[in-house]
Length: 409
Figure (cartoon, rainbow, N blue to C red):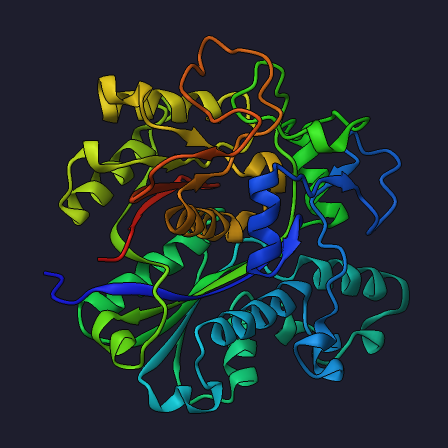
């Protein structure tokens, strides 16, 4: 039984449409897309030539340049967004080791940029030319270790890998660590850098990527009748979660409170949406609130032809007649799908919606789909009272997670 409360006091975010909390939130409110033509590699021969690349990010602004060069890109995102979150929470990172702290990072693809590059070198020149730090830097848990090393803190750490749900699951586990009394502070979130030739090739082969290359900013179209697939992206997002009394004792600003968390596997293809429905119900029951208390749903909705419709059906199933009255939007219309960090980006959008009573829009929603007929906040941000937000995340392999955040009282 949960006896303590977990609140969010710090936000760090590196997204395709904005680096830092303010840039990211301003972009969401303005309906600004971060989808562009891929510049990382030659896309000749690929049917999809667009992605949500992070532009203007210099890891040396956040960490030692030499160490950064040895890191995979996702580790750079993890360290930089952690430093942002700690600064935002007004914590002294040098004293974190004395505060009963833990680091939980969600990853999906981890270090594919480094792995693919080192494999090319190996095939061309042999093992003697492989970077000696390459294998270590490519392990999925190294991002968590890089965060701990950068902080110089004597702390516990954990890595979560549940596909696109990884980041949200990391926050969910942080919530449980705090509410059961194990930890006072947990740094939790997700980081991924999956824009690589091999990953893009695999996704294109699966025919789940948008090929609307002529207008990149309009390619990600959740719930829209002309959606033809998702858009790959990257980024990092870390939150500082604290036990309520500890946060109050140091006078921390509180963005909001984690109220409930649920996760479920989806293993029966004949009953699509069963997993996300179960996760939503578990999160609501965990929060001990009624469905009428939810003011906004931040949808997983990756602009996939089937998944967007399935999530719509699940929302209708859970909320019944209320589903027509609850705003539902997908920020993936602006940022694409950054895999393991996606759910945490959604959380940040939800937390800032709670603080400003503004719901970010689903851009590029122009053509009605009879199977997607809810209020998707099309085109423009909306002023609306927001006290409680439901965040949904679905991962490859059948992982489904939902998390409830609410205004702190």
